[in-house]
Length: 328
Ligand SMILES: Cc1cc2nc3c(=O)[nH]c(=O)nc-3n(C[C@H](O)[C@H](O)[C@H](O)COP(=O)(O)OP(=O)(O)OC[C@H]3O[C@@H](n4cnc5c(N)ncnc54)[C@H](O)[C@@H]3O)c2cc1C
Image: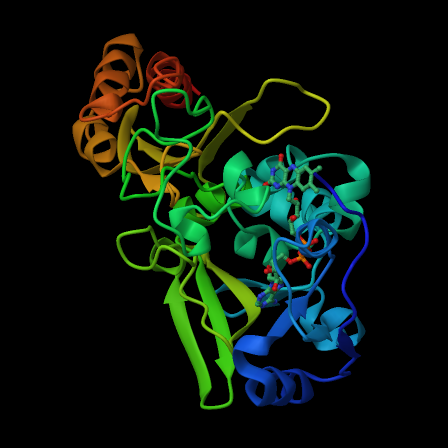
């Protein structure tokens, strides 16, 4: 299927955020922001997606780096996944994020892949990636959700014509940390919570985030609220070397006097967006993180799951990951 030969495009290499935003605004839906290229170049080489004006962000130093702020930290969108994985600041305060970054793909991909690209990457449904005319590609069929469809990796919740899931390992960690996504366009800057940043097919079947043509994600801010909490991240994939999650789980928990005072938990690869497990949070708050609470949490997490033909296994998988997250 891979044709390995890209169509020609105009390449722009801005050296400032303003310059990049001006270019993205000028070319609108014909433009494409290029970060590490790990997702982008797949699309271009397979000729399944194309943009006539590519805006290469790699020369914008202001988009790189991890900075302390009055209220937490700010991570530039172009910061590599390796830098996040190895940052002492992130390891000490928000280890759920460094642990999640460590489980992304392979060292080579983490060296070039950026946090911005990781949260903005497109769906990994085989049919969609191969360029068929599915709903997400503007057609009228979901090939994964047919009697013969291969849907082992697909969703348990949120199916709406499309059954693809959120592929990002860092996304659930950012939801758990109550991160804020800083977005800039020609009109100015807006800030959206990580939970609202990701959107499902019921909102817009052709996008996975709130970003629209002309928008640039410039930074991710993580507030101090959850700094130093008891964190948990676990990912289950078919292979440990590199592979997308079948299910992943992220949680942040604050214990007081042996009981759970505050908790946030989110799962990836079970819905088109990172799935915040509010019901689990409500059920376990005020209880000790013991075996009984973990069992209750696991049951609560999978309530309402609607499996497809080949992904029933994700239900006990999610249940067990939630139990493990509670037990720490
Ligand atoms: C073989 C392989 C295995 C992988 N396995 C995993 C995995 O296990 N877990 C996981 O989480 N990920 C995985 N990935 C994804 C990878 O981690 C990259 O993070 C991701 O593909 C994109 O990062 P990038 O910086 O290369 O972005 P790019 O490919 O350059 O961009 C990706 C998308 O994001 C947009 N974008 C990038 N930056 C911005 C910005 N600042 N503002 C607006 N839009 C932006 C681009 O326009 C594009 O649409 C895998 C990728 C590959 C190729």
